[in-house]
Image 1 (cartoon, rainbow, N blue to C red):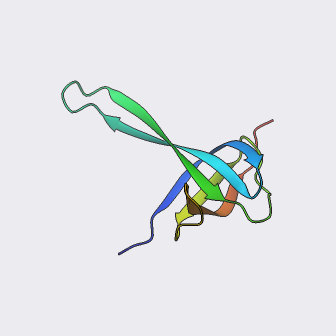
Image 2: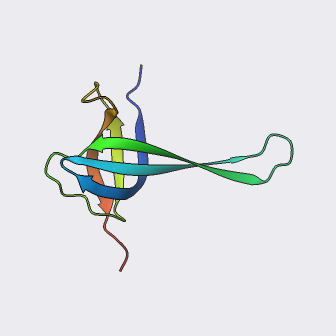
Length: 82
């Protein structure tokens, strides 16, 4: 079984050692074919509090770290576009 990875945008870093990452899933509608964008939020562990809002990050599934936290930030791909 492969370890799941996602790439998303940090939308909140207000908690200590935790960030909320929004991951977009774009897929065509089964009947009409229009591209539908669905967004899912993941709570991810950020050990060094390095992530800022707007950063693009890669997260990886891990063991349960708290009630809602099951993902870990692996790397920051790009900073906030200024």
